[in-house]
Image 1 (cartoon, rainbow, N blue to C red):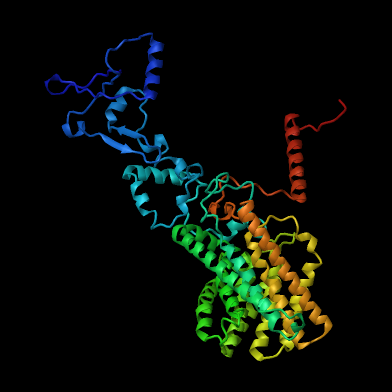
Image 2: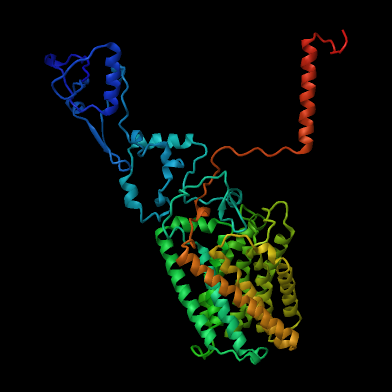
Length: 565
C-alpha cells in the first residue's frame, strides 16, 4: 500500500481511493522498499491512497475501458495533479499498454499478423469496426503514430501501383514475394479458403471449354472424318466444363461477397486483371462447342449480347488505361497474359458470325487485331521503359499463339473462306508455336499453379485452326498435323487434369496462400542502393586517392613525401 499526502479539503477530510495494486506496481513498490530497508506489514489487502479532487463529479469519474483485443479490463482515472506530485511510474490505462487500439503495431506489420478481416467486405465487418472504435483522444494519437511510421501501409482498399507489383513480386505470373519484402498477412499460417481462391481458377474452365470446341470440330470436320470420333466425347466434355464453371463462379462470387478487398487487389494486379475476361470467354467457348444433340437449332443473338457486353465494357476500361498513358499504360503492365484481354474479341467475332451478325463480327475483329498487334510488338521489343520479362520460358508464353489462331478462324467465319488473311494469321501462330516447341526443355522446373490451365487453350485453339486449314488444303500432311496437334493438346489437358486432382485431394497443395494480394502499398524499410557501375567505382577510387594525398601534404606541412631523408 502506498500512502500519499492529500490536499486539504472541507472539514479536513481525506479522500481515499482503494483499489487492487497491479502486479507491475507491486514489483516497483517492492523494489523501492528493499532499497530503503523499510518493510511494513499490513493486515488488510494492499490499497493505495491517491489524491482526488474535491469536486464530487470529478471524484467519481472513473473511466472503464475494455480492450477487445486482449480481453483485459482496464481502470483509468484522469488526474494530472496526482501524476505530477507522486513522481512515481504510473502505467497508462489505455488500450496501448495491452496492445489494443492505440498500439503502433496495430498499423504495422506485427499487428496485422493473422488479421484476415482487413480483406473482408466493408459492409460485413461494419459492426465489428464500430465495436472497436476508440475515443477522440486515442484516435488523434493513433493518427499521429500512423503518420510517424513512414513505411506503414495506410489502407488495404487503396489501389496499389502496378510498378509496386513488379517491385515486390517475382516470377512470370508475379505470384511469389521477394525475400526482402513483407506482406500484410502471415506466411506460416493457412489463410481462409476464399482468400486462397484466385481468379486464375477460371483457367480450368478455359481449358475444358476449349476442349469441347476441339472435339466437336474433330467429330464434325471433313478433314478428320476418317477418325470416326463420336459426339459423345464433346457432350461429356461440355457438361464437365459447365459443371466446373458453375462451381468456380459460385466460389468466386462468395469471395466477392465476403472478401471484396482481396478481389480489388487481384484487379489491380497487372497479370490477374486479364483473368477477369476469362469467364466471358469461357461462356462464348461453351456456346461455340454446344453439343448438337442438346442444341440442334441455330444460336440466338441474345446469347452473344449476354456474353459479349460485359467483356466489351471491361475492355473499354482496360484499353482506356493502356491508351491514357498513366501508371497502368501498356508498356508498364504488358505481359503475356495481356493476350487474354485481346483474344476475346476474336472469339466474340466467331460467335457473332455464328448468330448471323456479320458487321459486329467485323468490328470486333478489327478492334482485336489492332490491339493484338500493339501488345505483340510491346512484348516482342521489351522496351527499356517497360518491366523486364523473365528470361526463362514458362507456360505463360503459349498465350502468344492464342490471338492469331483465333483471328484466323474468326476471319473464315466472317467471310466464309480460309483466304489470305486467315492463312497469314495462321502462319504467324504456326511459327510462334514452333519457336516454343523447340525449347520445350526450358518449360520444366516450375512450381505447379492452377493458372496453368489458362495456357492450355492457346494450343487447343491452334489445333482447331489447323483443322480448318486442313479443310481448305486437304492433304496427308495437313491432316496428320491436325491430328497430331489435337492429340498434343488433349494430352496436355489430361495431364493437367490429373495433376490438379492430385494437388487438390491427395497432396492438398492446390490452393496455397495467395501472397500476391497481401503486399504492402509501399516497401517497408529502406531500399537497397543500386550497385555502382565500373566507371563509378573508378571515379570514387580516384577521388579517394586525391583526398588522401591532400591530407598527407597538409600533415607534412606542404612537403611532398619521399623515401629519402
